[in-house]
Length: 588
Picture (cartoon, rainbow, N blue to C red):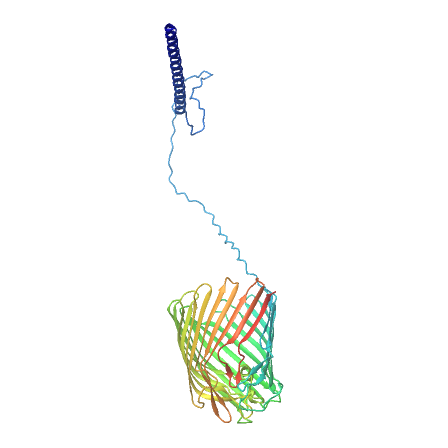
């Protein structure tokens, strides 16, 4: 029994050792397999590294070349052992060489002209404003031509509204301005012929009267004044480029001016100017003649006015002077309402001298002059200044203003291309300066002339500054110092005035403007009972804007008379308050 157990233990021990040996053998095989795998991996990696190191990078394409090889001669060569000497002689003959040149003129360069901007053949401008104010303007022409131009311009502007007077009464203050102008121009090689016919019509109502008058309610026809103005003119002038050639300018004209119910005047006239260079100076002559004929309704026969102005001048861009005289002769009948049946000739003589020179080129210029002139207060000129003259012969019997002498000096110049300034002072001696006074023998709505002798000291200054590429600012101011011998004040004339204007242009698409006008205090005179009326200082603002929708169509709007007070251009005549007008413009 013990032996069996002993054998069993021995068998178990042997089995255990066999199993352990097998396990060790298995481990050894695994180690060997792992080692072999690692060796293979390292060997492969080393082989790849060696292959990479042996690679060659080509930077240029491969070009196969052949080494130089000597070609064997196919035919035999024979070398001659006998030589023949070569002998020659030469001489030098000195001499000059003159090349031949063929001169040909250089052709002028051909420059292509810049394309001209498109020129429209006309436009139509239509608008409507407050106070029932229609506006129409039409212009038509044949466009750009090197032979001539013909065109038509017409304009109408009016109002049918009412204005409130100082006595709180609303009166009809309508007006109407019409104009039709037919013109033509003919171009010649060195001259030009112009001709035009200009017709104007003006309607005014004498709506202003003394506010203390009661019970006055006139019909519109009773206070209406109709003016008709027709002018025909033919002008021919030369354009010689050489100043030594004679240049002349002649204008033949005719005017018919009429006030409905009063009469009319016919005014044929001739103006002639000529000049040429002689003895190193430029000499010229200006002559003018006007004949006035009146209808039978006017107690005034005829009038002849002749002026002659010879002069000499010389200069350049830096300096210039002119010296001459002016002579005027005025022959008229019944020359003054207080003196009848008398025909008299009035002679006037005036100096005509001027000198100007540059102190600083382009920046500062000094100018001085001494002259005089006769101011023709004929009916046509006066009616456009004051259309409410007393009906009858008053408008046709006005005196001539004699500006005996005027002395003027000033400085002007530019700061840059767009900025400019001017400052001047003038002193004027005159006789029979025309002024206006209310005729209060009636209700005061008509004016009669009064005259004054004296002097005027005027100081003027102006400045134009572009603030930027879109905005420009303009300043202007005047001071008037009157010294009169027969009148207390210069009636209806301000002591000073000025204006500030701004213009804005945004890419030529939106164009706007604003103008502030300042008028100093003035004085007016009434006839009976004699009384002086003070007209206070008045500021006035005008605004305008235009929107150019297309190159052919634009819309515009204007606001005028923006102020805190009413403006009286003439005594008893208040102007319209805030006035708004807008419209459209179309280019043809």
